[in-house]
Length: 390
Length: 158
Ligand SMILES: [Zn+2]
Image (cartoon, rainbow over all chains, first blue to last red; front, side):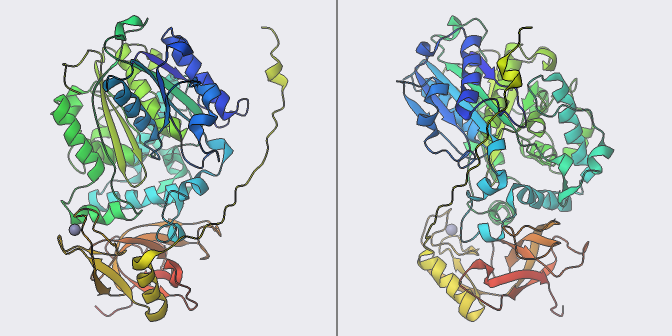
């Protein structure tokens, strides 16, 4: 990755249309890489279906994306859209067919009813009539997690406090606030045990990244951030599947994340993620994810999430700071969110993350989360990987 | 700083709504299942001939073995609450039930997998993962998953 562009993340960007918002991020990325539109070989773009009520986003957005007269492909996989766009751009370049590919993720949550739009992702016969939307869906996970591990609501609140405090260092973040566990605990319940303070916001924003092949990677003003490896798993169709079916076969905890993690760590050579990663930008859509997903990502044993985060190991200055940017709990323009995790990890690898920089960071983990517990995972490094791997 | 025209611009916002009619087919498996709910108040699952898992909701094909599941299995109207949450505010699009009502994942007796449905008629604070629940069927049934009105704590004698 040789160029990074992002818009400020705000609850509403009425000053621009969706196309203009995309343009803002794209021009920032091109400027960052000292490129013009003409230098781009192909474009990959993604957002959430139904969020802005626009089909054919790939063609509609051409004025903003810079794809006029170029190969363009839309990718949309729900919450993982942004990381899928990054993977798609990487595949474009890694295939050898393109040298400079633009990856774009964007969303204007302010323009629609987020839960109304999300419900259209679920089966009209079996899920929609009894589905409570994204918050209630996550609450089912939190209830199960607390019942099986004894984790508390206060443990989860620690994660919300951490990420929003980190956001104070990120001028692009939406929610930037110093809170206390008590303050989170006093916010109203949306769906027990999930409170307002545990949830991500709805955000308008866009992000663009320039991927380049190793043949041209030195042609840009900034040092590249390298893709060291990636893996993704999408499984289960119905809302209820992750909670029961995981027990039926193999008895794992969060199968998609654990399967992707095994493949990725094996490929990159990760045996002790807490020691080996210098920083992680994780798609944590609500606070409880900051406990449970650490376990599925191998940072600690099952049930060890609360102890891990309360030890300070994931704070700024800890062994492996998580979400120096403030993460999803501070900004969630959904189609941009996964790509922002990759962009933030890239800035860390380039040593260009400003006040949120983890000093000396050379290996980073970025993840995307979505749908019925899907998982995209990418490892970035400051050094070029061995040829033939990744 | 020079004055920027954008600072004093009032932004026009156009309200819109897309309302598109659909006619979704339930397919043979879905139709058999929903007719059984509607006409006999009976839950049905399908068994995978390879791995033996009994799927409820029924699947025409096992998503893992990728083989057809032609065998129907009759299931009980009782089951175990796997996980749950509570809705505290009314919303006609979510449910006709008055809050507080719950969303729960329920594994019916005789099935290996769970499904999502509504919880009602429970004491606040009484829901627990692992508790026994039973289906309450709707009086008017139309061939929908809402032919089951909701699940409530089981009144069976243990
Ligand atoms: Zn099977």
